[in-house]
Image (tube, rainbow, N blue to C red; front, side):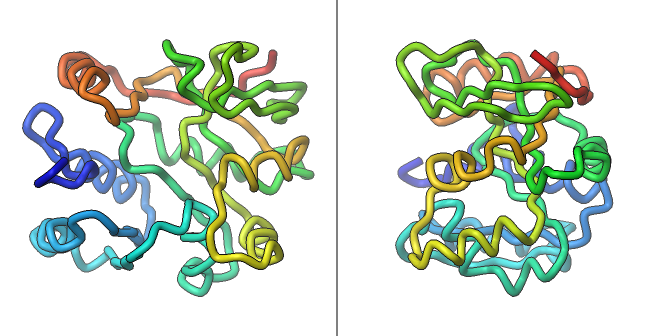
Length: 226
């Protein structure tokens, strides 16, 4: 990553960002906003060559604001409806259209839908506790003895109330995992993918993703009640 931003690291010869763009636009997502920081010019040049370039907007953060801070500073772009937020340093094959449909049928009290997956490294993830109807009752961000292996996949569909809450905190830098999720326990709907999901943020996990990508089947979603 000295010369390649993480979102453009190639997996089986294909930049990670391209997996995301193909998945999102094949699910009828109208537009995508890409937040840049490290090696922003490389991302910008890549997007300029993308077949989806006319449906992509770019913003840049000189100093990272956290996922919540990025939502806040781009609140006008998201508009008055629900919006999807994803961390593009994960290789995944969940079904985007199914996640959108799950959000539409979420329990009435929920204002946030979160994608979950089974992790083989629970201590490095945010671990979810799920109650009836798939509602999140507990969340443990990278703790030593997590109560399970059902992890936050860092893919969210947010109602405008989430952006309003972030604005109410009155600060520019907001971490979604530690400041937003805990504030909405009992109002978050979790759906679990049975497909592939891996953070490629270490050399070891990247090597595993390179090998596993060859055989990963399409993922599907289902409500998970524990």
